[in-house]
Length: 218
Image 1: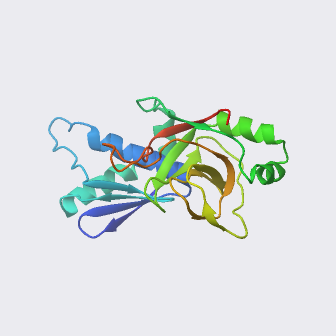
Image 2 (image 1 turned 90 degrees about the horizontal axis):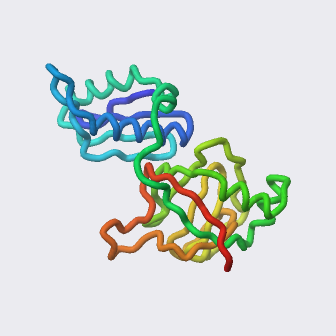
Image 3 (image 1 turned 30 degrees about the vertical axis):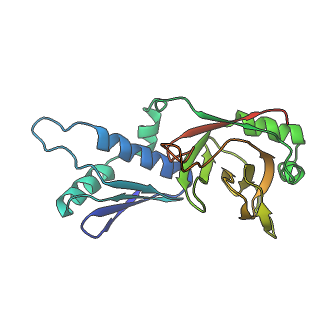
């Protein structure tokens, strides 16, 4: 993990892959929630933690001294040791029911050199982690907790992907909350509402969530 100061109130943490970015985001959340040590001022909590594909922005710190404390603390952390000594985060994984009848299921099967059934089995047995959100409200970029085969994006994106489509592209898995253009490979569909502005928490998935997919009949 590398650190870079961003002005007087933010620190940018850089890693090499999305799974490490998830670990860094979880580490920052853990550190921000810990009480201060005796004889030392508590660590200033950031106003916002913004994860992305290979970065995490720790933003809204009260000043340069707080930024320096965070930078010094994180410089001595081993992500491998942190993950090895960390139990599963609290709460059950989010489960999304999927009908595996996507238009690109055969494409994924060819890329993975397996059957359609094997694609479904692998997808449903994999624990995914919500790395970050973007594109449209409620769209979560999810990465597998363990190594997972990549899938190339479509050469020609679709002008309209139906809302609820479950899709793969590169190292990511995602669910389209609404109908939009898109170039990911479609493996199935869900009736789950990924975004609802009337809910207390509009987005079903947030960074740090764990996620499993469950096969269901049409």
